[in-house]
Length: 220
Figure 1 (cartoon, one colour):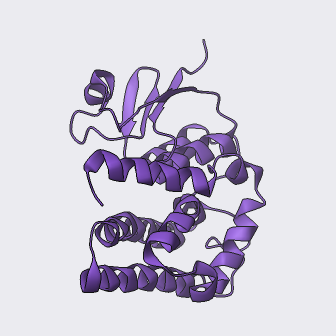
Figure 2: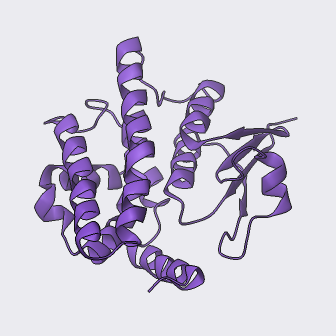
């Protein structure tokens, strides 16, 4: 009897994209269950993730694992017959975990504050969002990938946000190419991986999704 793997997710979630890329990297077959968060969370999602009630949730042989960074590490440990996602060196693993934690705590919340604000407050949050990406660009340095010559945990943790760049730029009136050219060069390298390019949705589709969210929230 093989593994039974189910992923509760929503297509536009950059956190869910991480898990989908990781599963693709490991060649794991799974059942995908879409959660339409615009109309509400399913009882099954609340059952599988009773603490946060958020996607993604990976259900492996009936047991749920929550939080995308934790799920990716779990996938790497369980399906270890393929090339590792996590660095082998303990310091490099800690370094990658630190920056993924930084990404998780900073990018989406800052974008949301920019999106839902106006005037000077909006401009302040836009500057903050750009500064986050500039710091991540500085952390990359002149390496091809965050993991050095190989695509790894930190690359996987950040690249899903690329599908949201057009939305960030449109609402913030800036261009990532102008602000962070080296980061955009890294994006192009990541997008050459089939596991990434086949997972990330079209940027305009994400933008239209955000407009639908805006309407659902009654935000002008």
